[in-house]
Image (cartoon, rainbow over all chains, first blue to last red; front, side, top):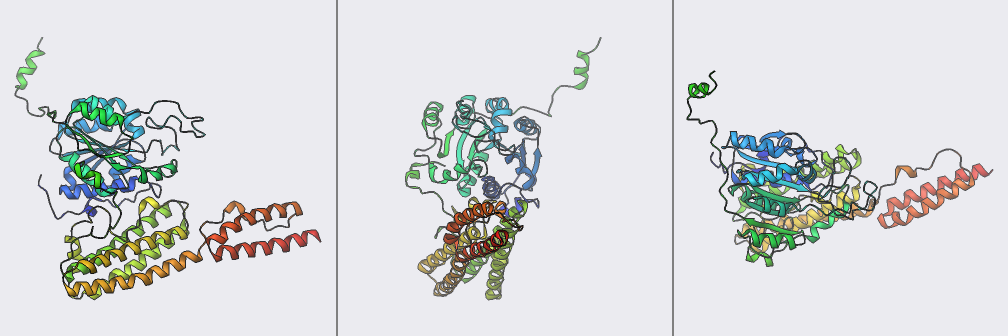
Length: 275
Length: 233
């Protein structure tokens, strides 16, 4: 796998036209994806984009890379299998907050713990947009709509803290409205060995028009990334949720299982089953 | 990536002057100018596709028109460049630094209920970013030929901007709601009074949006009066 500097962001776009709502943050995330891939100079056939279900999970179809639009919440399971079988591929997983943190919440914990060398990008809009605006695990407790009268009253899920506690090796937060910065963080996440988790705040302008205000709320993290989980935990747990940049850069060794190379002789294995 | 410099960083703005690819000679300038227009064409087509998906055909046509206009500019630059292969040269240029190409409309500003007024407002913002980019090149270029050509490019921008401002002034900001179409049948007095109040409320918005919307209100009110009179008689 060699980097090709001639590849441009346009080369990673497919012929399929996105059908996200106009103004959706996911358009910018797609731009950031293609820009990051071009910066890495990876051939489209050396990248696999795996997704689950939801608005954001449409993204593999809009790239020219290998793609797998999978089962709801199971994107990480599929991606883990792929990475184990084909460690030469660059595996990028793209989901939303509902798919990734609710339906696929358990896979998230164990993917962080397993620390396979892949990149997990969650486009977080604090809502189930595709199904018309139900509260997701990251929705604010007082989000009051016809579908959640008075709000859920539930404490929101904190993906970055959970990723850190579960063993993710790289943690970052980006804002879709800053595609250049998002692209450079994605590049770093892909290059960093082990499981990299990137939360992209991606507004849902249809069901959360208030999120248009995010562009005025986000700000760069005031301090450099740390490799100390205790320091990172304190920072992430006490920030305002709009701190952008790389927040944790760990040094755990990625999990690389030996597959496809068995030293055992087949006849030896058969002997075990002899009666 | 976070660093100690982060405290001084400001959020990225599309097409910040000085953010673009370096311009060392005339070939670079033509290539950058060509790419700005080509990027705008691509972005307007993307927005038109979005509007078609959401059945906002009126706005899709506006974005297609804007794409066509930018396409004319792009081809004109290619013609002006003569023997320089601007397409190949533009491809070899690095990406825009932190923001996007100046004339690319901001995708985050789009909405499926937007009107041509909003589209032109987006176009105007793009033209203004391009203007400040070329002004930056004029101020920083060391090659006099580059300075001269960049100056010429920046002089063209105000005319485009004036067109966009003029269009914005004549297009209502809000689309008339289909639910507020006055029935063509004869109206009872009470119904007519209800419609008058609806129109009166809309008039306030139409006056702000531009004269076309206000004329629409006047025409609708005239029709309503005529029909009410015929009902009373």
